[in-house]
Image (spheres, rainbow, N blue to C red):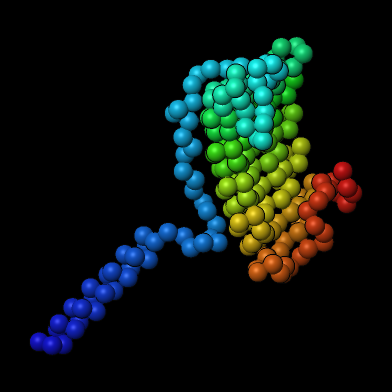
Length: 207
């Protein structure tokens, strides 16, 4: 009888451990793969021009008519086509900021929460090809960061945790040959590493 009770206790303990492990949150320092949606429900559908004389930027906060501004701010080219548009809540970036080329195509799309970079940041070349796909958590690089050449060929895939390189780091020349293929652990690189990723390479030459 005692043995049966002990076995039952062990079984219950095992179930509890498995449940807790499966439902536990990632430990601090682990790569964040998902981001909660930024709340933009309180931003009014009001848009003003960036060069409006009533709009003032003080200590990183936008004020309009003496009050912190909530709404959209847009900028235009001399041709009156849209150059950028951003959403703000109580004077701070909140939600999505988009910039456009003179031909009207999307150049960048960045997301903010409480005035700091949060979530996906996208960039495009003028020909429409994707330029970069970054992830930010509280203005720090987090997770997989990707870049491409103007031709569409992949340039690099870098893994970050809390704004520091962590895990596999890969880069290619525009001709597809590997340029960097290493793993970073505790700030130490292991593997192929010919240079820091500071330049865009085409074949064997810097662009």
